[in-house]
Amino acid sequence: MSQEEPRIWGIHTKDDRLFLDDNVVAIGWKEMGNLLGIDASREAFKDKYAAVYPDGKKGSVPLGSGMLYRFCHEVQIGDYIVFPSKVDRQINIGIITSKYFHNSSAKEYVQQRKVKWQKHLPRTAFSQGALYELGSAMSFFSLKNYGEEFLAALDKGFKKKANEPDDTVSATSDDIVESTRDFVLKEISRHLKGYDLEEFVANLLNAMGYKTTISPHGGDRGVDITAYKDELPPRIIVQVKSQDDDIKETTIQSLKGAMREGDYGLFVTLSNYTKNAKRYLESTPIIRGINGTELVDLVLKYYDALDEKYQNIIPLQRVYIPAVKKD
Image 1 (cartoon, rainbow, N blue to C red):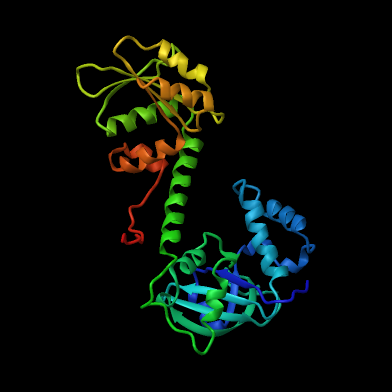
Image 2: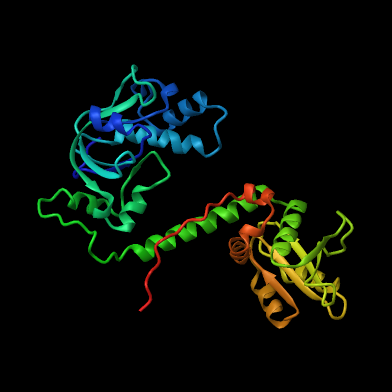
């Protein structure tokens, strides 16, 4: 495989000293053996990966085999590699100096390439956006958005960014927030369907300060949860749907049919509402519709008050992220 310009790759490891002391970059998957024994095609790598790891997660086959294929066949001598070391919190930039080889004597990282390190710089020398891209969840990946920033660090006149305004903070923070929101919705969709979602919504309403009663399974007549703010009216009738399709107007009308005079209605879905359903909700102010995005907002707001069972299903850690200063 030939190419006109060197590519820029990112890589992670749990063995910083191997990379820094032996001047190599490496990935694991020891059970795959020597990758040169596999036909040089993505399909062949997928087949081999699936055979070696038959119990792997569904998405692991294209992800893992893709990294192995790129490391073995797409990386070229002269390509750049960027490696964030945890032992000293440095960003290490090097040039690939060898073809792929299999080091059978290595304890774990047997898939290797030689590298000549060019510079070792503190993380503060780079923008938040560059650091975020380098923090990819994958072990080996192509740096597409901020690769040029890492290459610029090799110039003699390179100036550290520590004392400069960082225009990437806003985009980075937004990416982190959106990634978290996507994760929450995916975990709810994956683990909580049908009656399980009803119980979760009831627990969320409890965390918000409501008293709830879940209707018996199969006998709700359109009412999944009954909620009160206190012992006095109004009563809130809740219907929960875990379907993937958008909710139609007729479905919301069935909730209204189950409501008595003075009741309020709440419809909760992991998906969204059709245009007609949205118009119906707008014209029926006693019924509030919550879609998947709004449900995530509530989960994040009241997360600490959820039962431990649901915190285990949606494991989150409280962290601080950069915030953009307002003018």
